[in-house]
Structures are given as structure tokens and as C-alpha cells.
Image 1: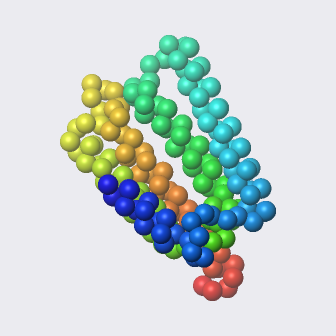
Image 2: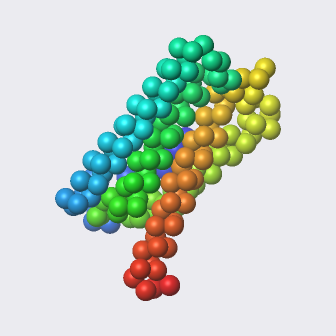
Image 3: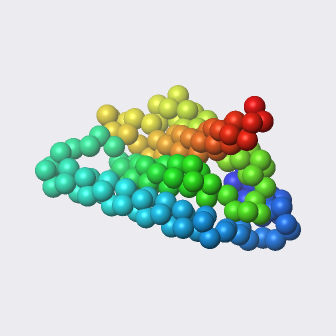
Length: 163
């Protein structure tokens, strides 16, 4: 429910020009395309490694859902890092500070749910990492994106001589 409310709020307040669609310039589109390509190749390599591990009959102590979601997290980090560092994460009409706060809030919520599952003993059952780990992983991913955004914002201010 909180995620739905945040999405609705972002649709109404997430743009500086009153539109409801993010706009990118040509340089951003090129960087986003490269970021998507790098994330795709990262996911392919990750899945190839998982398939090879499975073919060797090596048991990985986690559920298949966690295993697959981990690939999404890794490729998401690659995409986010590349686009953030190349100024292509935000469109030219996005309300950056509002969306950054929302991303950090969503990350904290997921991270807390993951910690709650960990404290309840639902994360590892009989030595197998369970699906409750996904909230923890999602929290780490989203918080990492928020931290990257804050680091990039600080770096940009330093380059502009504002700090």
C-alpha cells in the first residue's frame, strides 16, 4: 500500500514541468542505452554462471527465487551506477530531490522488512536462505541507489565549487 501511495505521489509531483513523462536529451539517451546494455550483459553472465553451477550439481544454499532475484539486483546496480555517474539517471524534467527522498524511504522500508524477517528466524530455514531475503536484498539495492545519488549530487556540487 505504501509503495502504491508513493508511486501515485511521484506521478503527481515527480516532474518539474507539470508533465507526466520523463524527458531525456540525446546524450542521456545514449548513456542510458549503454547502461541497459551493460546491465543485460551482467545478467547474462550471472545466469550463465548459475547454470554452470547447476550443471556441476553444486548445491547453493538458497531458494531459486533468491538466486534469480540476486541477478536482478546485481544488474540493477550496474545499470544504476552507470546511469547515475553519466548523468543519465534523471530526466531533464524530474524533481530530483523529491524522488531521491522517495527512493531512500522505499529502500529503508524494504530493509526494515528484511531485518524483521531475519529477527523472526524466517530468513534461513534448515540452512537454506528463504524468500524473505528478497526484501533485505531489495532494501540494499534501493538504498545503494539512493546513496549513489547522494554521492553524485555532492560530487557535482564540489565540481561546481558550491562546497
